[in-house]
Amino acid sequence: MREKKREGAVRSGPDGKNQKKEAGRKEPIGRLERRDDREWAGREAGGRKDSDAQNKGIQYWRPSNMLYPLPAVLVSCMDEQGRANVMTAAWAGTVCSDPVMVSVSIRPQRYSHDIIERTGEFVLAVTTEEMVRAVDYAGVRSGRDEDKFERLHLKKTKSLHVKAPGIAQSPVNLECHVEQILHLGSHDMFIARVLSTDIDPQYLDEKGRFALEKAHLLAYSHGEYYGLGRYLGKFGFSVQGRGPEGRDKAPAKAGKNAGSRYFPKGKGEDSGSGNVRRGSKSPGRG
Ligand SMILES: Cc1cc2nc3c(=O)[nH]c(=O)nc-3n(C[C@H](O)[C@H](O)[C@H](O)COP(=O)(O)O)c2cc1C
Image (cartoon, rainbow, N blue to C red; front, side):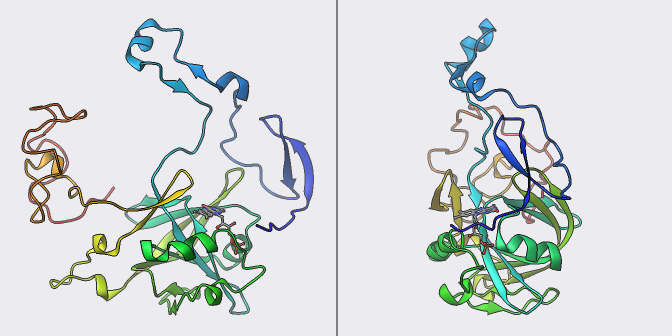
C-alpha cells in the first residue's frame, strides 16, 4: 500500500517511538501517558487475592482496539474536479441519534483524507457479503494510483445533498456533512451529520419496512471478514418475555426461561422496568 509521505518534524512519542509531527498540525487530543509495553506484556491479574480468584488467569494486555466485530464500510468522496474515490473503513460508527451523526476515523496519509477535509462531505456505504472483494481491495489500494470505482465495477448513485456518490451495490448509503474533525493521533476522526439515508428498495418488505437483515451484511473482526450469522433476536427481546417477534420462537438453546451465562434462569428477564416498551415496533436507538 503506497502512502503519501508527510512533511514534518520528527519527535519522540509517549511510547518512545519516533512520531511525525505535521507542520502546523494541532496537538492530538486525549494524549495519555502510556505504560511501557514491557509492563503490559503478559501481565497477569495480580495484587489482589479476590481478583485472582474471580479472574481465572485473565491476562491484561496492553491497550488495543479489540472492540469487534465492526462494520466494514465504504467511504466515498469527490474532489473539486469531480473525481470520485472510495476507501474502506472499519473505524466508523454511530455517535448520535438526534441529530443523526456518525463518525469515521481516517489516517491523514489516506488519499481520501484530504479530499474529505477540503470538501467537508462523504458518503458512508454499508456493505454486504457479496461486496467483500471490493471492500478488501478498496482498503489496500489507493485512489492516488487508480480509479477504484471503475476497477471494482462499483456503480455510483446520485446523492441528494452531497457531491460524493453513493454505491449502488450497497443497501444503505448515508450522505454525510462533516461537522468536526478531531485530531486524535494516528487517525483524524470526522464527525458528521447524516443528511440523507438512501435505501435500496429491494430491501423493503411488502409493508414498506426496511429489512436490512436480508442484505447479508459484512462484518470485520480482528483482521478478518465475516458474514453476519443467524438472526438471533430483535432489539429488546431479552426483556419482552418472548422470542424474537413474529420470526422464530427464540434464540437457539435459549428456550423460554432457559437461562444462560448472562441471564441465569429466572433472573434478568426484566418484565418491563427497563427502557424498552413492551410490544414496541421501533428498532432500538442508542
Ligand atoms: C477492512 C479494512 C478497514 C480499514 N479501516 C480503515 C479505517 O478505519 N481508517 C483508515 O484510515 N484506513 C482504513 N483502512 C485502510 C484504507 O482503506 C486504505 O489505506 C485505502 O487504501 C485508502 O484509500 P485511499 O488512499 O484511496 O483513500 C482499512 C482497510 C481495510 C482493508
